[in-house]
Structure formats: structure tokens, C-alpha cells
Image (cartoon, rainbow, N blue to C red; front, side):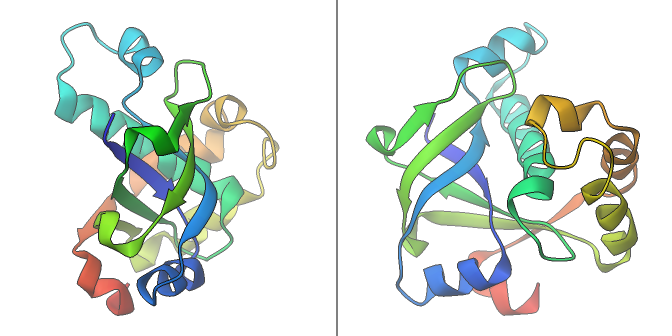
Length: 156
């Protein structure tokens, strides 16, 4: 499981880019539990897409920026611990900017939908709780995260 999708606030991403490591992060990855819960024919790219989608929901509870930001991070296996379950939740010990492979960000028009999803009845609950909330489902259906290269951080 080398690729982990880690939601962060932009300020944390800037500190990371400026040389500070981030520690004790939550994210999602294509874990064995996620693979068991997915379509048996799902390949690694599809599992990564599911993990990214789950991380985008996790961002609603672990970040506060108006638009979600998820980093695709190539982690060292010893820095990742599976948290169990079938949503691919993991804990990441530490991340440096050199490990960031891509940025995934909401398009600007998604701010209202993100705000509605953050304050829904399941706000502050578990990732599994959030996944069944109507405002979260509406956000996932309406707003795809856009891909950016790491050097484009200041443009997102």
C-alpha cells in the first residue's frame, strides 16, 4: 500500500512544502479491507480511486478549509498502520513534501456543498457515519476533486 490519500488544510500543506514534516495523520489507502469490500474485479487504480473518494469524505471532519485538499502521498510501509474496517482508513506516522505525488482539490463552485456536508447530522462522527449522510452523498455526486501537480499548491 504505497499510495495514501491524506486530507490536510492548505496551511499544513504549505508548511510541509516549506520543509516541516507532518506527523500523526489520518488518510485512506487501498487496504486489504477496502479490497475485500470492493468489486472483486477492481484493479489497483479503481481501489486507489475509492480510497481517494473516502479520503475526500474524511477531509470533511479533519480539515476546515472551505474547499477540500487531499494529498496523494507515496509513503514508506513502516509509516502506515491500517485502522481496520472496509473504508481503507489508515494512520500515517510522518510525511515529507518529497513524498507528495499529487494534489486533489475541490473546484471553487463546490464550497457551498462542502459547507453543507461539514455541518450535516453526522458531522464529527466516524467516516462510516459520514458516508451515509445525504449532504455527503450529494457532495460526492456533484463535485469531483481536480488533480494538480504538487508544484501548483499556491494555485489551489
